[in-house]
Figure: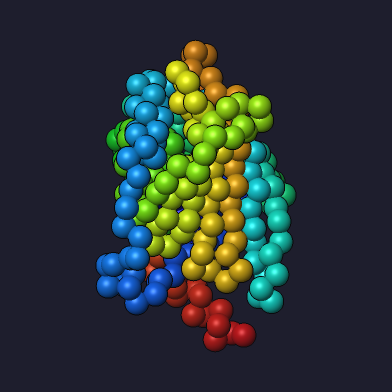
Amino acid sequence: MLTLTRTGVLLALITGLPSLPCRALADSAKAGTHPLVSIEEAAKKSVQAMSDYLKASKSFSFRADIQYDDVLPSGQKIAFSAQSEISLRRPNGIQATQLSDTGVRQLWFNGKQLTLLDPVRNTYAIESVSGNTDQALDHMINQLHFTPPLSDFLYEDPAKALTKNAVHSFVVGSSEVNGVPCQHLAFVDKLIDWQLWIETGKVPLPRKLIITYKTLPSSPQFIATLSDWDFSTRLPDSLFQAEIPVNAVKLPFMKEGQAKTLSRASVKKN
């Protein structure tokens, strides 16, 4: 998965992150081949151990300190930062709040509907989505065309979500993330390169993620350091119920076709 896109949503993304659309790789990638086609067993086992640990937990929360690049038309990269608080309760609860250099965003999913709120602009959008958290995440990505950052760790099987497009991986070595000993892994996908730091020992938690969008101009990066993992605090029902200000303005979700129409109209106008 490991993508970031905001195409198709009238309301600003929950993340406030820049749009990073996918582009085609070289002809070899288009043909379904790649010069690197090996998944190192040690790297695979580490990701699977992390995945199994998260999968076994009915609920958890964590914090993410994020840095990300926005690329200007000139090619210059501008660095922004954000802080996210993310909570998951299986089978059907997601809550995320993000404060960034570009604003504040909140997201709720309660098994019946998905709600996005921009408290600064005082706007929100609601989408009826029934099912579990995997189905809600798939709906966001496939129907609403955006991917909340770090959503791969929220899937029932994080290993599958993370590595489904991987064509090569290896263990870089051992290092520390904020004083926590970790195993440093590197992966190559067709469209991105990414690195993952997993805590060593009995609690194989993800501690850091770096994504490099190698097919985009200037190769922008997304960097997230994960901390404050909590598997013991009870997450109440109220946490997953949207809190919308009385005077907030409701906006519709914009489907992909509508977004293209508005884009063409904007081009003609200019």
